[in-house]
Length: 109
Length: 146
Image (cartoon, rainbow over all chains, first blue to last red; front, side):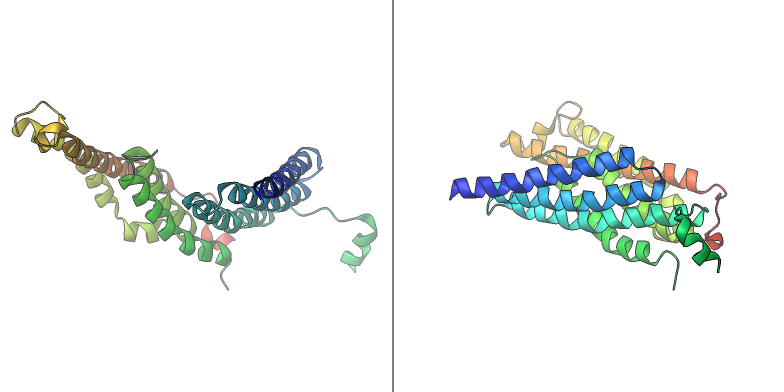
């Protein structure tokens, strides 16, 4: 039973590592603001939830698990909100997402 | 529909929780990591977040600048007053044992609580006062330009 919980929690934590590292690579390698924001915000939420779930499995039925669930709840709310605020501020100050060439005539018509 | 609707809803959800967490850090400080400095900063963050999202005049209706200025002095007064109180009871400056001569560890518990309360009030006041001083200047993007 302990082995099963250990394996499950390590799968979750390594999955969280995968998503966070992929998000970091996307932040470094993507060409413009919007794709970078998309990469890092979406993958960060998934990675954070997997981290929290893996650590909950390690902690068992204790007060630590309750605190971890609270942390996960508030980060799940505040992360997307911060992304929304950044994207909103960029849009208002005049930054526009780049449009592909075959869509440009559509936009003008 | 207001432009900042999402931010306003999330802020209303968070501000109360942040203040509750500040009190937890404040009064749990003698058992676990935390104490007056951290609790004061967390408490100030609640007011700064409210001010950032709802505007300076709204947060200054909750916590007027004259209250903030009194808080700066009140915290130091509580800190030093605890020490002077110890001297009046016959001990040295900030010697908490004298609060409870039969059980010195109980006296130390209550003494550290008073001192941390003073530190927390002063740090909250300083952080909010710095925010008011910066935010009171003319904004670069007005609220109606969004």
